[in-house]
Image (cartoon, rainbow, N blue to C red; front, side, top):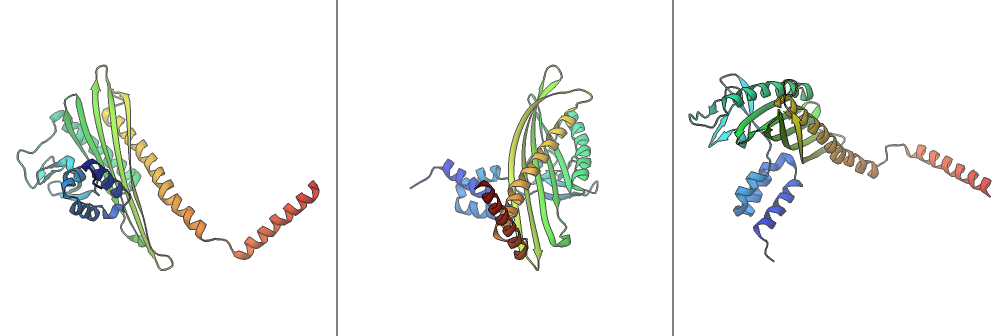
Length: 273
């Protein structure tokens, strides 16, 4: 039985969604070895953990992705220059570059408030009837308390500016999260998962509600919802499974509790009869 390329791609993407996020690069490479004709589609469809680079000019870290890459060079949001040097690399217009600088400063504060560390980067580019951008946030655990982990969030937003001081926003967010604990009592345990969500909204644009403020509130709401979803699906479900496999209460206490329940049932039956 043969499968079409679209069916093979659907199966490959379905498989990638079920594999550990911390091994995405290895799994993606292995998958491309199996179906090399899907290489381009897989690379463009599968979100990979964000990598960090250092802007030597300003001494700040920034995140690498397809949206700030031109050839083999990556543009820093802090200095607006490419590394390795690329003289004719794509850069945003002057108006958008000013907004990009303000957005990086705003999300730098957002990252510090919510994540207390990590790295964030914002990249914007021009469209025919507006602009688009990506907000990247990465927070990796330092391995203290024998816990390792990483949070990667990628928020791609498309903005269509309308007459009458309003705009239409389309936000597509992907979050990749994994945790690993190693303890003598329980051994090594891995938890991880990813989720993608999309939302669209029309918002007014004025001095009180700038593009950055509108995008910021949408990203904040989306991250809170996705954080709760990941917590319920991956951590809550794991806790339920563990609790069903073992009892945290003493066996003697459970027997006493059951005997009390049985006695109450017996007396209730006597009263009914």
